[in-house]
Image 1 (cartoon, rainbow, N blue to C red):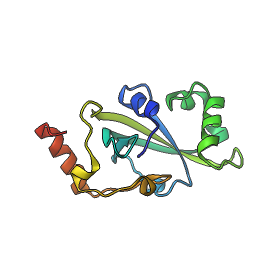
Image 2: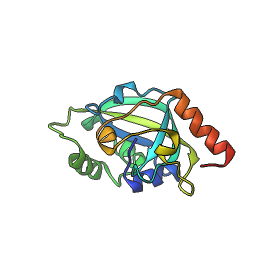
Image 3: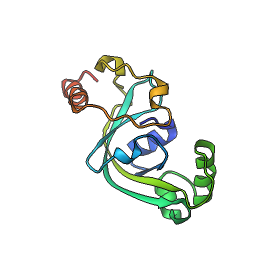
Image 4: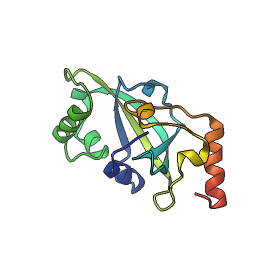
Length: 151
């Protein structure tokens, strides 16, 4: 997933444990508990962290609580709505959002893994507004690079 840098840092620093994604995000319905999320901010920078999905719930904007918004890295629910309006075509407060609970597993900010080093030819347009499901072999390759200290 592509994150704004401040939110990626908050996840890796354990200051944010919920990621909110609009139900219209391509492939968001395929994210399941137990999946690994590759944390990226810029494709050129590469993978800066890995988190694991521990839970998912779907809520309308009106049902997202102040606590949910704060756990998602916003200062308030109002601030969350204002930021979501910049990203998504919100039409009403009944629209649904995925609240994806994450736990950070690996912080690679000091030694990011470049996608090309994994043999992946992914562009920003491939990821923009989407979630891409990677083959298990790619995840294993990432973990092997980390174990070898090649990250």
